[in-house]
Amino acid sequence: MDEMIDNGFPLTTEPNILRDMIAPPNIVSKMLSVVTGNSSNVSNTLPANSYLDFLLFSGGVLVKCEIFGVVEVNSHLSGIPDLTLSFANPSILNDVQFHPCVRFRPWESEQILSFVPPDGQFKLMTYRVKKLRNTPIYVKPQLSSESGTCRLSVMAGIRYDPGKPIDSIVVQFQLPPCVSSANLTANHGTVNILADKTCSWSIGRIPRNKAPQMSGTLVLEEGLKQLDVKPTFQVGFKIMGTALSGLKIGKLDLKNLPSPAHKGFRAQTDAGHYEVRS
Image 1: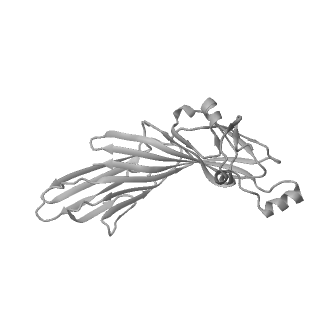
Image 2: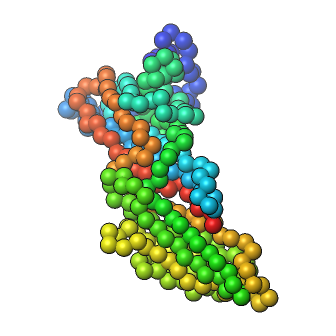
Image 3: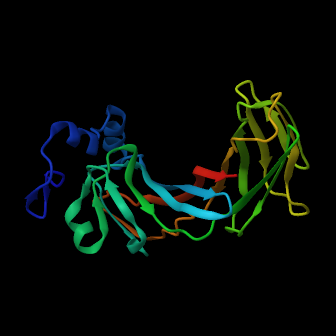
């Protein structure tokens, strides 16, 4: 009934949605409850994943820098738990969407998430944080063409320290159709040119003692003197343990539980559509 009614107003009566909101207990958990008086599943974890979308035009013109975020719940709680989640800074959130288990009235009035979680892992909410000013890394490409040869130089480095290691950094771009061959090397990491003419520069982590740089030449097709189509560089990275969105969990309350439960929070930021145009 708590899932069907929100402050006296009908919330949902659809059987399919209710089944998604509350998973029926299995026979093992029932037997454990009978024997021990409690369920063995008493954990609730909130992974918060952020994806940084970034678009930079040539000349350093910033077009877009925003976060698409996902708050996931991995719930293994007995009975019909009632959870309340609050944020320290909910005003930064835009374009918020919720799982059907979330009651809308508490969010509209106090920006608090009140919900009865289904069993297992699910997306509690998605959101955007717009108009970010900084990105953790920079990628600076430079190209110059002369006599059928294009010289390419790409530098990468840390723009600001997010407080956690930036891992799995990779820079990719598609060789233009007018390029017949390429000779590219890097002072850190590895450079590979794939069969589909994608150039992939795997950096890993930025070293402290030098700035990673990829450089070399692109040989144009016969008859061409200059590169007429400049490539777009896609950047990938991963930061464990931090959310670049700046969203902060305020408090998580758990009610209607027969025994104390473990509460955990985990944050991660990945590059989303992160592009630098040359």
